[in-house]
Length: 175
Image (cartoon, rainbow, N blue to C red; front, side, top):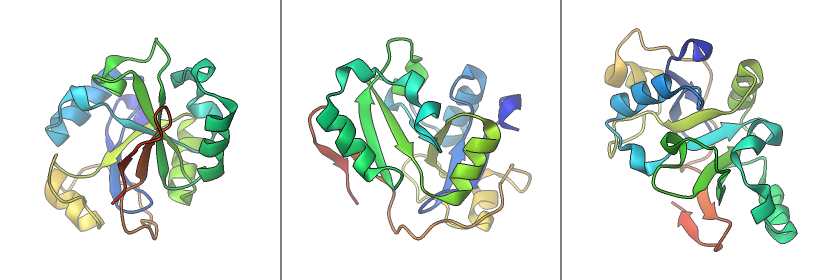
């Protein structure tokens, strides 16, 4: 499905997510349309391994202290805003010069990224500004009964991942 430029729903640490191939402009356009989301917001990339997100990051602009902080929290429910590599497409960064990335400890995401062979976009399964889907039934209610949904259980986190801007240390999302 992902290799065919489709959007899928899958369980994440705290809710169902929508994802697609971050290198496919066609798939990202489908995702933006589904969510009624502005491309200016950018997206989070989720991965099972640092090598899956390394090409999106400008590592030269990270200090050893910053890297240590990132890897202290990974894998886990922490998304970091890191300096984006100059070649990263606008549809991933939006109006920002950072890229949002997370190395997940959730088995469903790890299996998905390992099977896909790379990172994928991860955004909540909902229409922008609506409540995220917590069950397969909610996913089908919002996106149709034939929407591609990976089976599995959401994790035990009660809230979306914390988002930390590693450049200035600010906590962007902490609920």
